[in-house]
Length: 370
Image 1 (tube, rainbow, N blue to C red):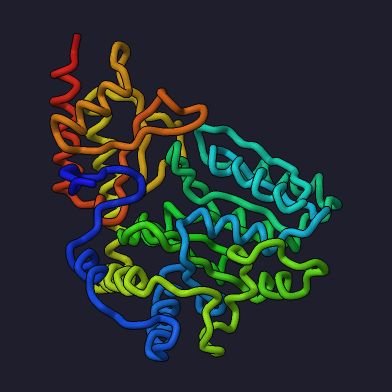
Image 2: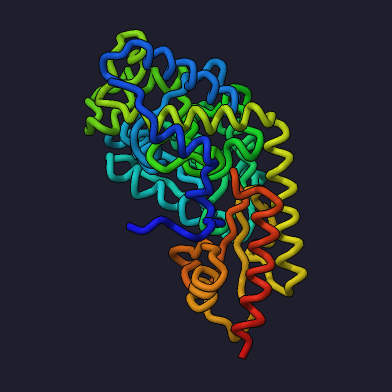
C-alpha cells in the first residue's frame, strides 16, 4: 500500500496531526502486564469523559471501530422481547433497528423528515400517545453522518428520561466538535470513536455508561449473547487490572496525544472552531451555486450538498482526488449518487484545509463543465 498523497476532507476518518502519528509508532511495552498502562488508561478515560460531560457516568475505550460501540450497547442492553424505540431521521438512525432486532428486541420506529432535524414536539406527542408501550430504551443519532443532519439530543434525551426510558446516543460524528453533557442530559450510553472529531486513527470506540445502564446490564435475566460486545466485562477492568482482551496500547496512547491536542487548544475553542468551519464551508458552497441537501438541522461537523445538473458525482469525486489530491465523502443508501459530503471535523476543521478544498472544488467544476 502506497503512502496516501491526498487530504481526507471526509466525515471520518479525518486528518491526523503528526504528533499523533508519531506516537503510534513508539514502543510502549506490554498492555497486559504493565500496571502503569492501567493507570494511563484510567486517566485517559476520565479526561475523555470531560469532553462527553461525563463525571458520574463511566467512560471506557474499547478496541474496535465505532460500530463496535453501537453493537455493544445493543447487545448488552437488549433481551428477547424488550421494547425498544428507534428514533430515526437518517441512514444511521434507521440502522439501529437491525442491531436491536439482532438481539431479540422488538422495535418501534419513530421516523422524522430525512432532510431536517427531529421534530421534538412531534416526538413528545408520540411518546405521550405511546406511554404504555414500556420502552426499555431508545436510540438516537446526534449527527447522522450520511446526510449531516444534527439532532437536538439535549431535549430528546431529557424528555425520554423523564418518562423512564433509557437512552443510547450515537454521537460518533459530533462529540468534541459540539457540546455534549451526558450527565446533565440523561444519556445512559453515549458512543464515540477515535477517527472523527478526535482526529486519531480508526480502531477505537469510546463509550460513556451511566449507573442506570450498568444496572440494566448487570441485572439481565439472560446472558449477553456475545463476548466481544459484552460491556459487563469492562466495568471493573481497571480495578481488577484485567482487560477482556489484549489492548492496542499504541493506538490508545496516540489517541491520548490527540486528546491532549484538544485540551491544549481549549475545548470551548475547539467547538467554536467547528461552528466557524461549518458556516464557512456552507457559505462557500452556496457562493459556488451549490444546493445544500438539508433544509435545517445543519451539523457543525459535516455538510452534504448536491452537484449542479450535468455533473456526475463519481466524475467529480475522481477528479478532485486525482487532479487536486482532495478526497471528499460520497454517501450511502438513499443518498448514494445524489450528494457529496465535506467533513469539517477535527483536524479537517482548519481554514487552510477548507479553503484549499473549496478552491479545488471550484476548479473541478470549471474543468469538468461541458
